[in-house]
Image (tube, rainbow, N blue to C red):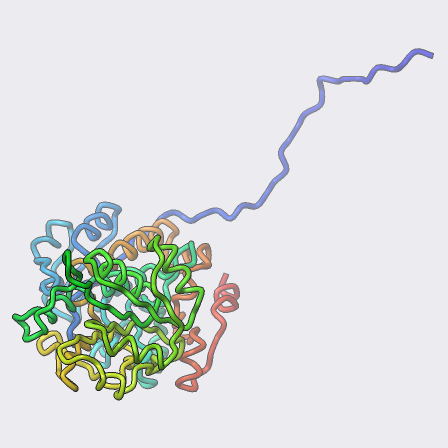
Length: 404
């Protein structure tokens, strides 16, 4: 029996089946306002002239209040040359649908805020008030917090940059106050041949601790790091690439090391609202006269019992003969670098929002951004804030999904 050959016909036609794709909308022009900060010791500005130039050349509108960048040494002319519109009336800047601030929203801002506005700014839970939050909710505002903003790798880029600045700055500050000019001990931070190195104790093995350790080691100091997270200590050793003296926070060991050190840095970051106090007044009283304490954790209450908030104008006070430097918001003292760092995160974010057809579409496509949103169209979407002020919490994912 002969095998039958398959019949091939030329009349077959192939057609594609329909498939529904998530089509991205065409880009949107954004209108961005940058007000001048009036908050205590805030010298930063959220967008640098270079970043404004990129936004303007991509078709977006930027208006900035007169002298908003002055404290970071950015002139109005730098902004106008980048294509921004300089505005002299404060209320005018607040009419922009998107507001970008380098300091948290305060009571004075509420009057100017527009219905349904988007605000990108820090939120300091310690100074946030329920009444302020309620007024923002009433105005159906969407608010994105710097501190909680995640990038696609799951890290917090603005917090990281600010911590890197603070950590690097800490050793420069310590070196300054150890010098004779500032009535310090007259000790060179680090060491030279034939003289034992300066002892630096760092409490907290996070980013601030890591960058403080890098700077101290580069100067030739001997560094000892305390943290209750063994993982953080291990990661810090790997990042720095050398064996370091590390310990968990054990009061007796800590007291012994503080007794003989020249510089003590507090860079603990508590998961709660306040940083735990790990250095008691007694431990400080046993420290060498003329040694320097720098409490970076002062933003959240401080981890030294003797710490009290100081200012950039009056940065130090003496207690038990020990120099205490407790200025909150250290990056603001290096305002230009800090402004560039914030700008590097916000500018691409705003560009992306424009390309996606608005911020709402961006949040729909980029799930990692949702952690930064604490208000969405007036609904409170941050669990910690809702618990603290006993306000209704709404799940952001459900909220966004229900509006699609």
